[in-house]
Length: 141
Image (cartoon, rainbow, N blue to C red; front, side, top):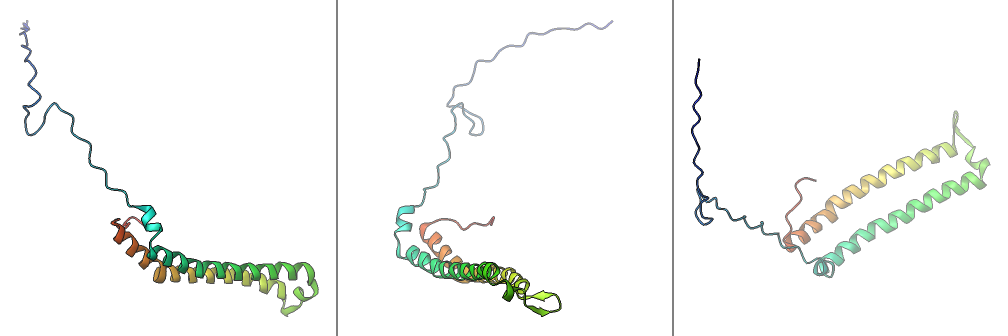
């Protein structure tokens, strides 16, 4: 038969907090320093940001107004000029259908135009403002 021998384990007193192994101490580590937040008020009041806003508004507001007028014209023609809208162009394609498809085409064209405008005129200025404020560029976009 096998005999089990129990040996008592001696408890060691805890080490003082200032002594540690490999830099490990009993003290909690200080929290990491938070990066300094940019001065958003200064950015908003800067001349570069004012130019950026003016450039953005110079594209978006006129383009929105033009599209709204184009859409409103289509709706008003559909409501008040049914004879004109039902005029056949080719086969069963009438003016109303052509103008309705034109709404989709113009929406896609405006979208592509804005993407190109933003890439060439807005994004470089945003990057310059971010760099001047000390904000790292967004890599995860």
